[in-house]
Amino acid sequence: METSASDVKELLLRESEEFQQLCRRHQQLDERLTALTAKYFLSEEEKLEEITLKKKKLAIKDRMAHMIRAH
Image 1 (tube, rainbow, N blue to C red):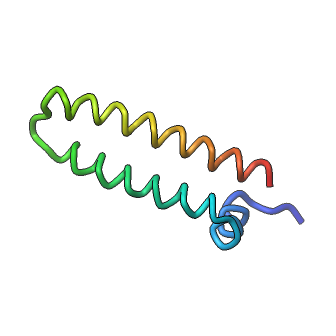
Image 2 (image 1 turned 90 degrees about the horizontal axis):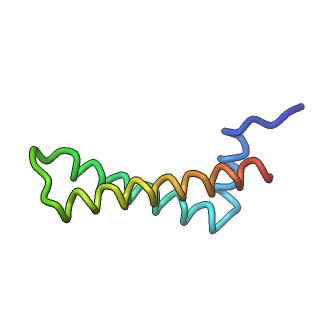
């Protein structure tokens, strides 16, 4: 029987400290990004932070996807 990606994700969440940390960090970045996008106007620093957060989130998501595929 083939294991689905969501099953592997659940397994990694239970058993992998690295995967748990990546999930927590992704959630933190998402919360900050949500706070920024809720603003009507962003300063230049906030615009740069928004771009940086998106890149970091994507890198974390890519790492998590790699871990799922490798499992």
